[in-house]
Length: 548
Image 1 (tube, rainbow, N blue to C red):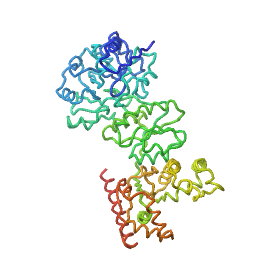
Image 2 (cartoon, rainbow, N blue to C red):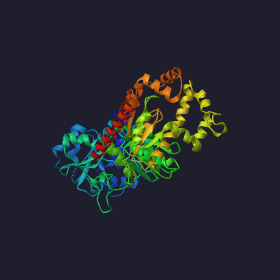
Image 3 (spheres, rainbow, N blue to C red):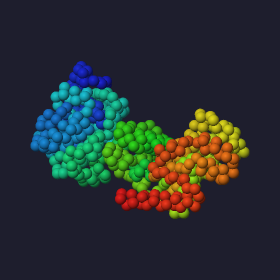
Image 4 (cartoon, rainbow, N blue to C red):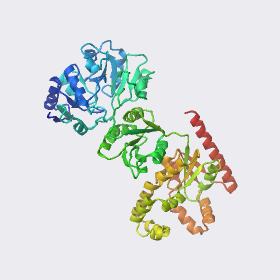
């Protein structure tokens, strides 16, 4: 079959709109863009056309389809006993990523609904596709335009990869803005039931409807004998060729878990902040841990992209279930066949940073007295130089001569990078690639339930992302100068140069979750205050854990 290509970016392109609509009217298959994913469309009232969708996708026959319409005015064409709630939701969220399950009319064939007496209805937020549906004059059944079980398509090129030669036409309407399929809400039951999380967050639906129940298919696989009431409920979906494991927990927890447990040869799907933790793996970043909308846009592309690699398995960081995180996590878990790894182990990792002489060591000692595993990043760096061939190789290649005789010449390296911003950036890049993963492994290997990480460059190195809490240890400049003079047996002039060569104290205060003000005149007072600070911090954590 010769698959036609339509590049339509505006609903005013009447000749192209009509040509695409003609395919639907004559019973053909047309891939259409929406704001969520690309759909494989056919006349939803034509059983033969609908059957062709199942054949082209290799889709199980009991997996129901969604009818796409251009406006809420079309609801009564396909549905009976349409509740007022449906119109209220349509007024608020249509066009948009919401599918409503309603009682179907006899005009809708059983093949479209998987034999159910209900049908999913949706008005897509893509002007070109609504114009095509209007021109065709029929509601369009359109599951995602991928081979069944594969990751959904968010670009026309993805559709071409799966469907070229199998269908009549592909409409290139640009990249999908949302990236995960629509939210499916069953309005035939009370309270309404969420069957599939999607591009419209559950929280926004609850603002309109109040109580909404969650179907068990949102969090687990349906059994063989159970009948799906909506697309994506029963079968393994969104899967690349390599098996997937979805790693749950906070970003810091899943990041640490992956550093310690992802085997050689595995692919990693990671939040942007964590992508650099896996220098020896094939990594796909899907957006910041704080940006779930970006994760939704990129998750399917990330899953699909591994098929062009030689990875043997894939591990993916999952977001929490707030907002769009519920949908993104659901897609990753479906891709994994709900094979998950729970990274939450009750461990608390605290990162300490601040200027030289601020007194980080005193706070860390207070933590160590409570049985914590302590990682001094400066000492750990030199330890790794002795035992990490990859770190040594990178340093030797970037800075020839600094490893002459097998030992690092610290003075020579300092001379090369001091005052040279470009060379310092190279050194920082090497440390960022090699040190945080090793720190995570050290923490995970320790039986201690608490860990403290001491690093001046906690944030610059990326190590902060491994920490559940970060603490800035702050002290007045004069106190820092005195401490450095005593500790390192150096002159006051040199101590002041070291202090003033570092970042301003405000830098650490702005980035950290907590601040310990170490402005006590005596060592005994500072130690007592550090002990109280650590005790209160651990108490807060235990209370937060108890409250979920």
